[in-house]
Image (cartoon, rainbow, N blue to C red; front, side, top):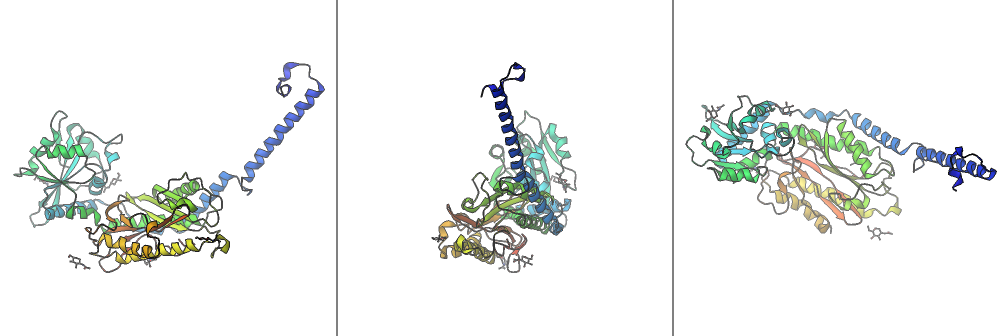
Length: 473
Ligand SMILES: *[C@@H]1O[C@H](CO)[C@@H](O)[C@H](O)[C@H]1NC(C)=O
Ligand SMILES: *[C@@H]1O[C@H](CO)[C@@H](O)[C@H](O)[C@H]1NC(C)=O
Ligand SMILES: *[C@@H]1O[C@H](CO)[C@@H](O)[C@H](O)[C@H]1NC(C)=O
Ligand SMILES: *[C@@H]1O[C@H](CO)[C@@H](O)[C@H](O)[C@H]1NC(C)=O
Ligand SMILES: *[C@@H]1O[C@H](CO)[C@@H](O)[C@H](O)[C@H]1NC(C)=O
């Protein structure tokens, strides 16, 4: 149709060409109006456009979440200075119990636990090659109690910057500084803080980089890895920490419950991720992972598909999600049906196995909670849930450990796996219980809640109560 695209300025035009040209413009007009109508109706023929549907979904979710009053936030406060003093003093006592002269730590999770500085807060670009380490030593007070005495090894030119960090100390920050051309490890070893000790014994954790450990080890110190009472300090949560963990984990479950009420047929997994993240943000929480899986996608426990599956009746929705609040993590999982799917399901969906497995996993979770007792082993908690799932014939489909400890990191030690007989549970330890069954190419179910080991009997749930049915997650 070459004539149809000739410019008008080309002069003499035949009648035949004119009518062809008219037909051409008519076609464009019809296509254009079809496009406009498509935009309005959306692919599912509702009267809103696709993006405004997501907008409605998000508004519904946030409004429903806010309507709960966000009461759960009341148990959380930013840890005050005295909390950090308490943690370091607990560490000092643990160092004495373990026969260690000092705990040394680089900016990171453990440093932020003891002195409120994360790795990016010290160095935003990349981890520094110049050591900046905190050295915490036990010291006896005149009344005989053990308290922490803290020193920082820091490059001379960074000393002022180190003092400007939000490090919670009552006393003046004490430093040992080095010039760049010095051996900084020898500088630390020669400092007066070690008194008469020839080869001070230092404990490090897994965040201490290898080259600094070797540097210390080759220049006068004895290095030992994290264990014993020192490891138990961060594992055993204070009531303030439990208050924050309760708030952020309850809030995360409440956000799932609120979002669920607004779900509709055809929404994608990726859209649910975005809306749920924004719902949590509405309460000041900061989402850091979010796995949303529909139907057979959920047979992979940690996701892996591209998030474009659309929600259809009969699909389970599995959501495993975490947020931060005051630096503490949530990590919860729910598996459920959307509100538009009837209870009980119409028989043609053939969901008996799905419903049985849903209940089996919940029963396994309850069994694990009963085993989560003071002086019990980490292994026993896993085994309690696993035995139930195995006896129902789904042992091979429960492919991962039962759970892990949680705090400023979502995954902390001790780990609840069936081989961990060495880890003994103490009151104040906080764990996930997250049994699951994954039938490949078919479906997956997981329930995850957060529990505190208590002195008097059963562990306490701090994630808003367990799921009750696939319609009451
Ligand atoms: C910890 O650091 C944050 C900012 O990084 C600050 O807002 C807070 O006040 C600090 N906490 C204490 C007890 O100094
Ligand atoms: C910490 O230890 C050093 C060296 O032993 C000592 O000089 C200093 O007074 C101690 N700090 C406090 C606050 O007791
Ligand atoms: C229903 O599902 C089970 C597995 O869950 C399967 O074995 C059975 O063949 C299905 N029945 C029908 C009628 O599709
Ligand atoms: C747990 O063990 C500790 C230390 O052995 C003991 O003091 C405590 O009474 C035990 N608690 C329970 C509930 O058995
Ligand atoms: C969860 O724990 C609370 C106490 O914190 C208790 O009132 C509630 O009954 C528990 N919920 C479930 C489902 O066990």
